[in-house]
Image (cartoon, rainbow, N blue to C red; front, side, top):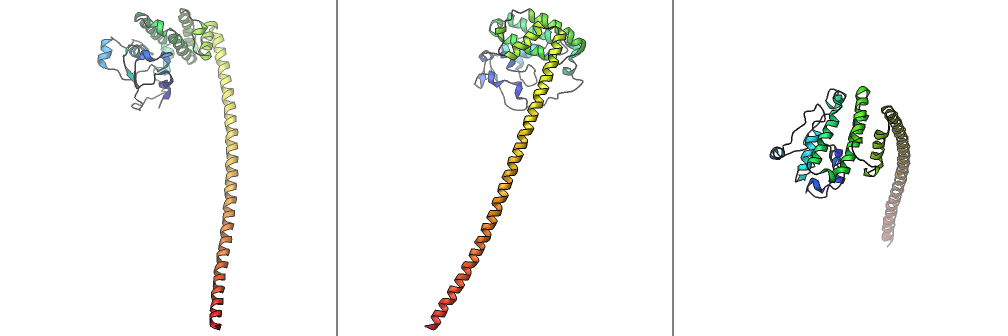
Length: 266
């Protein structure tokens, strides 16, 4: 299951909704791959929608434009398809060959928003999305492809009149400032520092978890010892009960004999 493919916290609380019902952060409500979505053929023909002729990211515009154009959308919370990931020869894993396709897809989406009068409503959503989307591409490329894409990303982002207040959280704002203000070399150094910090945080979290596991083990051991002690006490009580039971049986036998003796004297 891939719960992150749909941000239910951004969706309206009804079974069937219109994309217009998504009030904010529209472009991060879904991941824009097509294989977990179904579209009516008539709908695609009606809106003249098609994939871009790109090596990679060719589905982004098609899926985004389709969702923006749809009148009704519903979510089917079932697993209907299996998707293989982390294949070394896949297009996604060889994006360095076609690094510019990500920008080509965003340009087509930008033009679609302007053409259909949607940019005013979705402007902040679009700004937040392009920063997150392009940062991911930058962080997962290296070498010559990274350097070329970084310069093109800076030019693309600087073509918009973006303000710090346009971003929905500090994480996206920080990503925007790194791209807008840093050189390619500075960006790589900041990425290295962030990775090291995340590694240190992960190590601290692992140590904390190990300590918590050890505490739980000690607590379980103490509980086991308490249970063993209680079992021993229960056994001792049962033994005492057995002795008392035997004593009562002997007492009954003596009483019976005594009563017989009295009756024989009479």
